[in-house]
Image (cartoon, rainbow, N blue to C red; front, side, top):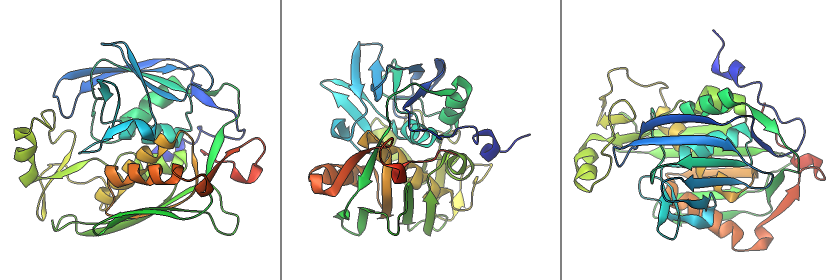
Length: 311
């Protein structure tokens, strides 16, 4: 049986054309917070559509952009008027890794399915549908100078590459009082193969003492040991244990990738963060785009050093 890295090595970007899916694909799963059954369909999109969430139950389209993020409590949620779609970060991370630029995400509920709490099911859907180039030129968001946001002892920062580097590098550290988590750190260079092998299967997690409070607040009604790691101080409540010894920081890194793909283009630069979450990740993008001196959108066809690989 082939490894995850081998399975996704077919996803490459030798050219700089924009990409979409070859065919539509659907799946049904449980909404993490509502507990309701949710149907999602990933569908090809016309050139330059970007990533678009389509609420099929109410007929509203919501572009997947950082400036449409209106809630970052426990997930990343985008909205337009009264229409919203939450828990989008795992799909966005999979799309970033697979270099999918244009996609319509049809969903019949205000949140995506949680599946197993990781991005691996979304990568499986993308692989099954196939990814194709469909013209145009893929832009790259090049970071030109350091931009940093902070809150208490947490921070998130984007920096330019040094010495002619390219692509998206991520260095992340976390620290929790729960002894099963503790302090963890991970460094990662984004590519489809590495994402599939090292990051995609890392699941979301919560502390046991927070579960009851979440449900009292009307959240996590669909949460279970089948779609989240539950930590009780030094004990992992899931019978199967962890998928990686440092699964917690890997999942937080997954969230960073998904949240920052809401920039609307792949990033060429370095991310450095400590104890960051959805809120700081979104604030970082807002800070970047607040000053045009922080970035430039380069045309990959003209700026060869900025080409990104998905191999």
